[in-house]
Length: 88
Image (cartoon, rainbow, N blue to C red; front, side):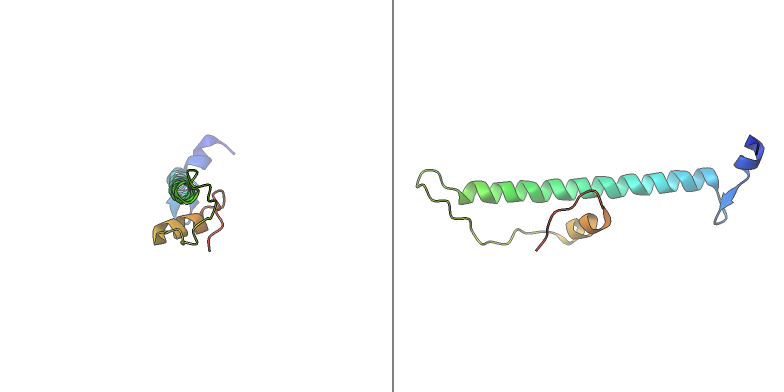
């Protein structure tokens, strides 16, 4: 197989170079959105835990408040296999 044949190859009717760029770009968008969603949720969890553990009174009761998770964050974490946070 020479380079000329590789340039003329197609995947689902699209040139192989275009298909490669689309797949890599989609993977990067999925990874980045999962990373942003996981980071935002972790920051909210840390914030709630810091306010729940009141060191001045010695109370260690964690509030039973549900952490607000937006729909796009749920979707991003569902799609990205590398960023998994246990959701209720």
